[in-house]
Length: 246
Image 1 (tube, rainbow, N blue to C red):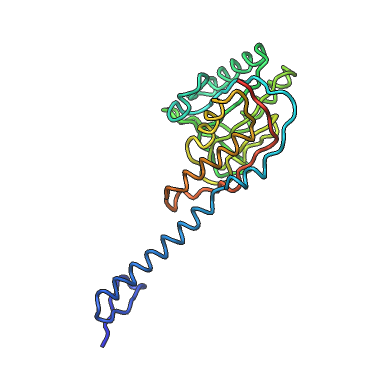
Image 2: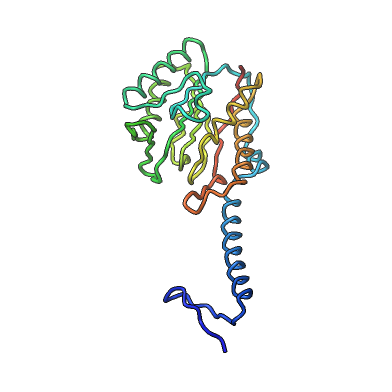
């Protein structure tokens, strides 16, 4: 005769009187759930081959550049000379204006990195920066700032790296070229680390950064970040290409 073990009012399992059988089924069910989540997690990352397929060839000479990072002072950002963890709109304007001025005077392309949080709202995409202020700004303010600088200085060039959640919602039409990290939850340094690696070379392209980002994804696949942090890096995009030189 079998008995029933009631775990919850809606969750009943047959117990055949053999503890090992019951525990084995429990473990098998748990493993199936883990495997299902692992499959979903691993499928959320773009492969190196998929990244290379998006990269187009780039003509012309390599250009000198200035990396400018708007984001936290932690993580990879501490390895860049020009960084700002803004606590006010005025700080963003001052930092961006100084970077534009330097680029124009030195004939350098601005490589603008946005390393912050992003909102899940395509129609009203907002960025939040760290620090005590928890400053929130509409992404349109950044893109309009780039457009204004290009209008004021026709020679000014700007390439964007958007390292934020739901980065594909950012309007990248203001840039000469760009990389956005995808439609889902992001991870810290998914673009900053590849950029730092590429900066060790005499010359590199935006496409090189994009491919190295996919290599970063391969490392992230080794870790299970849980159901609440499901990414969608398969939707990462490179828009155009650009050649840089140190």
